[in-house]
Image 1 (cartoon, rainbow, N blue to C red):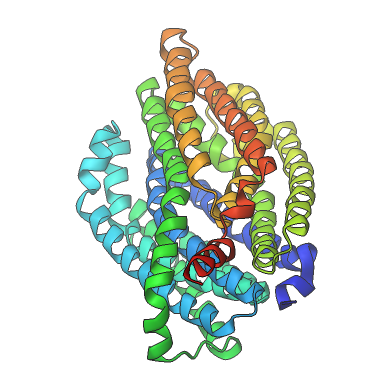
Image 2: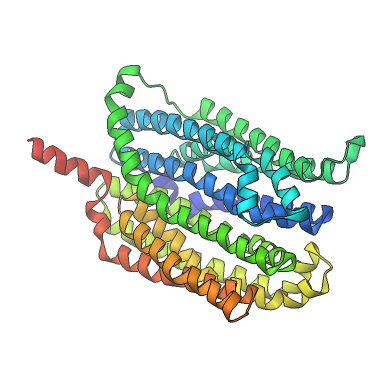
Length: 455
């Protein structure tokens, strides 16, 4: 079936996605800049907790991603009623999961900050921040569902508008809180957290309105009952392996932040500022990967496997050029960028080497995002989840400890281990794609085999 997304192609989908991701990924960077105005301790606290929030968000994301992959394959095969039922089912599970995780995060906030070794002013700021930011998990669940629905129906422009509202509202909220405009009290780091929650909620309202007007999703109770078992089983089959490697990465980032905290407040601040800056590279890789995943899964659903392979390789080449040029620019501008965060001479002096090592991680990270997501979307997620987890925990993390503490390289050692981690997993992931196991693991292939056995 020639869907609207297929008609738009990679660039048609990617252009609004690039702008959308630019707005979305600039928000954490903007939050860091505002928090740095409050204090380095506030910026370090929120930055240290970012992987915890991303860990929770990724649990939701893999559920949404799995459901959207199934729905996209239904759309590609022309099974519109099944696609609608799939959307409602994965939306239900995603939101329920979001509520559960948010409650768990709220009640375990003191334990999380303690186990991460965040103490003193950083620890106090971290607990204050997390007991507001937990609400973001529920908002992200609804946002993820809406985002996927609009993208799969070839309407990424609405996601761009939603993120524009989110960006502007977050900017205004941060400015009001940090500079105490309109006579508002000094809410500190909790005020920045509330600005994020409110701004993100406003963006979601735009997405919900767009779906209500533009996407027909009416489905009967009978259709939901007929599809709930099949969709739920496929959700688990795709989401379970899809969750392992991203969650392993996020836990790895939490551990690295804990190591950085043990190296001292200066090292933690440097890591937070460096990693948040290089989130700009994710704008290109995530936007192109999102567009590619839509096109690849719909081609796979239509049985066009060779075209799906060609699409991924073409997208990967473009993404590598884009992220490479972005990383080179950031390294070139390392000093003025770091000066936006801090005036500390030690942080300014080390910026070049930190930025250079972060840039060397970028090619591997781009390959991991592009190939990893598409392998999971086509049902071939178990292998990369296993090898990715083993490589990170048996090679990269021990190497980080060895370099940072035994060889006394400090933060440089942690960043070198990140380069090794991203590059090693990239080789394994791309090799798996080229082996074409995904030709036999996607939803349509499995259903065809099951139907053949029944006949």
